[in-house]
Length: 138
Image (cartoon, rainbow, N blue to C red; front, top):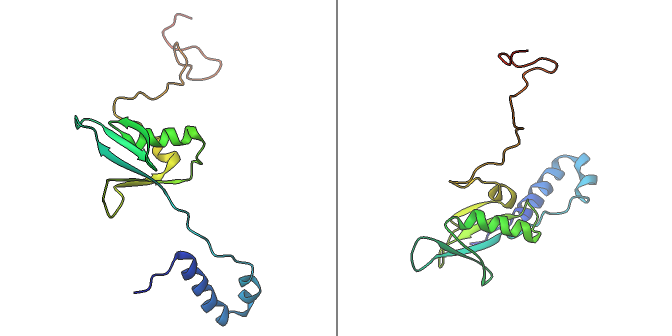
């Protein structure tokens, strides 16, 4: 069984299209195959109490948390990883990832119990500029 990467399939499809469409021939040499980048793989294992998870990245402990995927993503962003990096959560000895997403989106997930930052100002909201709220006696 032979497997092909996305770049090989893209190049193969382009070569087939260029034989039928001569106008594409001049642009075909300018296209470079896209090389897929490996995702950051976080491996989790339960703590002895079973209430939290230990998140490892290349044998380095990232965090011990009840939400290891989100917490690890936040730490990796703080370390300087790009937000568009793919991140995967794996269990030990698994054949496939358990969770996967873009680092920025995973880090932005609001965990149960967290409160969203409030950007509203204190006081009565102003409905329309230049008017006073009803019932304030003005």
